[in-house]
Image 1 (cartoon, rainbow, N blue to C red):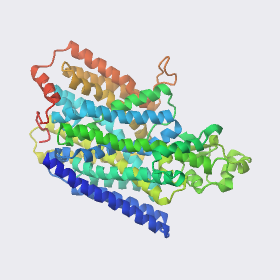
Image 2 (cartoon, rainbow, N blue to C red):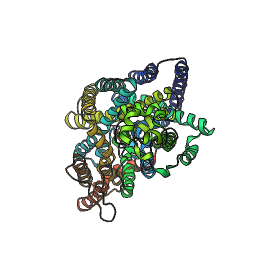
Image 3 (spheres, rainbow, N blue to C red):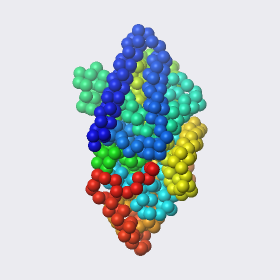
Image 4 (cartoon, one colour):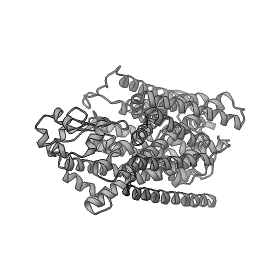
Length: 605
């Protein structure tokens, strides 16, 4: 306990100095910008310094031990582990949640509730029991609980299906933002993201991911809070945007129409009725509680109690982003109604044309590259009378990424937001990449094919797997980004359908059998993944639910089919198959026993 406290103090000092240095650095860049530092140089310096910092942290976290690579030596204090855990999912709400709130407040609320409820479920249902099992990965935990290697193979397949799209989508987000803010080609940005990601993960594994994740969380929080706080003070004289955004909503009276929102990449923002929103919230909650790359983070905690605290810290960090997103949406809406709606075309702000050329803003169905182009698209009356809300459609991701630009804040804050988005995306990508590689190296190679392999050989194989998976994800992010985003939105449903029933029943119902868990995973994940693939590819229209939704269940809410099916199959098969042996029941009791000591084999050795 004393050692854990000392480590927490040491990391607190390091991250405190890091946060202070970052704030001072941004302040200096802001001063230089006031004296004429060009905008491209401003963006380059802010992004470069922070990304190099992540890479340096990853390199200095290098390890030659399996316990260090897989589980950060099981010695990460809860607060810092929680920051890294939040960063492992933060890319998507950071970039897309404000756009979801602007598109539909109920949709934004559904996503926010799903995310936060998922971390609450993690803390209550999963975190301490996973840590007590001594497992390295989620498939490892299930193999410990059910005692059969077949469950490890199926779980590893589900793990890859659920997390590879997230990895590719997170790399695409980082590449897109880097290409935009640094004026890079897509190929150059993709290579840069791949290189930085490998520097973070290849030598340090979970250690590198954890300690760089803490830095990424700090940058992401500052990046989303600082612009919102500054605007709140500037407009309303009070530095709590979570309170003042209500005034912005009142001032931006949408009685004359609402601003259109184009489907963004990070989160779904269109085509969801009330039933799908509720289903999405439920699927997100179960998915976050079942995501392999989030569950694996609790193995890095020093004990079961620390694992539960880790989930609490992750909930707090995610809550900051979630609570700030509606304020960003309201301030953007206020700025558009103030500066764009009803304004003569000659007086439109420059950001309208800049983002129009970038394809992130549509006016009257056309890209607004100039005032003349807008007049042609919207009609001659618009030149004097100005635009109406119905004429405008924003890309959902622009609401956050273009916040400073749209609201008239200094460009340095645009660069800061971009840096936060890149950091959050790198954190999500690093967590998913490490988890996939650890599963390939531990669950497939070490546990099934080479049980007697030395620790060094297992580590080499895991690192080669990491390289291969990173290269594949980078190719998908560059060549098939639309597919990556489409499947990433459905990833929580696939994870929930594959793992949530097995996790919950495996821990809390001793009668759960190996065959029940195995067939439940196959049925739940198989049906969900098949439905997602058919809907995304256009081979099947969304399936309507009579009396509930005529539009059909979206791919993002497809866990609505798989999770109940997984529970039903797991319970039914468990009841008709032979009850678990005494040894298996003792394993379940040991996992659930409320003692702080590890009671099962440490599988990282």
